[in-house]
Amino acid sequence: MPEIENLKYFALLEEFETSDKLIKLGFGELQNINLNNDFYFLPFQLLSQEFERFMKAYICLGYFHKHEELPNFRYPKNLGHDLEKLLKEIIDNYYFDFDSPQFDLYNEFIQTNSDLKELLFILSEFGKLARYHNSDLIPDNAQIGINTKKNYGKRLKTRLLIQEIIER
Image (cartoon, rainbow, N blue to C red; front, top):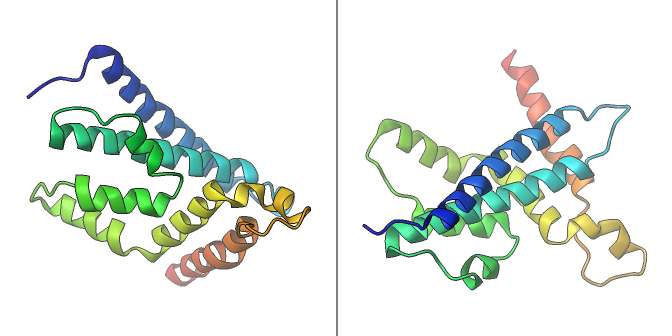
């Protein structure tokens, strides 16, 4: 099997390391949200951007595994900012079954967990359009993204808090 040249190998490694650190930072910032701090923009920006970065790096490795070469620059770029589309691309083309119970658990979680789907939807919408929600709303832009702050607070966060209370 061919090898990835060193420069590209280390670039991929750095992409995974950067996305790992910034995803953790994004979730940490999300945990800092409270009645005195409702600044959702930073955690949404970190999470949407870094999940996209992680999934595109994963797709590049999966592509290499399947085709024995890295994709050209257009392939990941044409996948856009839609996290749901990126996850579907991974599941359909680059999620390899290793015939293990742990894989089965991951696979089931990724494909069926409603909280994960809701979070990906919110972050995906933020990355595509909603990060400009207010600046698009002011001049009456016809293509305006959802209000992710409101969606996260009303839908996902509320459901997760209720679930946590029930489990106690």
